[in-house]
Length: 167
Image (cartoon, rainbow, N blue to C red; front, side, top):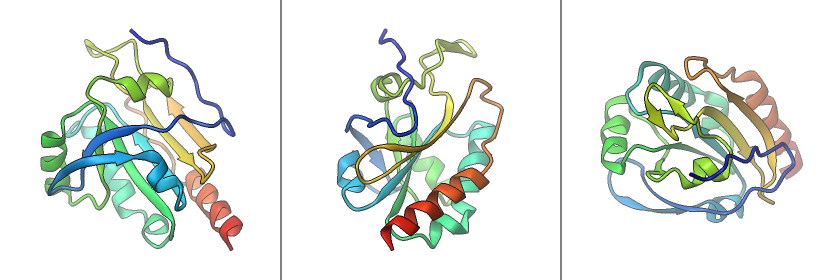
């Protein structure tokens, strides 16, 4: 198993490619394709359809500051397959892609995997990372408690600061 490496704010994260879906087709997503155009918010979460994960992703769906912010893309990342993601997106009308890190490589590389959580090894911790155009971490929130939901205020402030830089 890959050793977890914590990514700190202002640290540059590696590029990655993962399969994902926005609900219809399955395709490959590459981080740098989006950071080249602006910022990315990565929402790591344990499982599609779990109660807290559903609530957190629906909060992102409903966050108007993300909807009306140009050049900021949101991606959910879990170990679930794209087929589970398609159903999850359809059921909850999620307007952003969900990426499948089925082997946990990115979760491990970003230092965000539980050793074990509810008898599942390598499940992503609940975490948010905002990554800017240079692939530097501008905001990071991570919890050891998968039942804890992130607050949106600090993320909102980070997104506003990215908009100011772009202006």
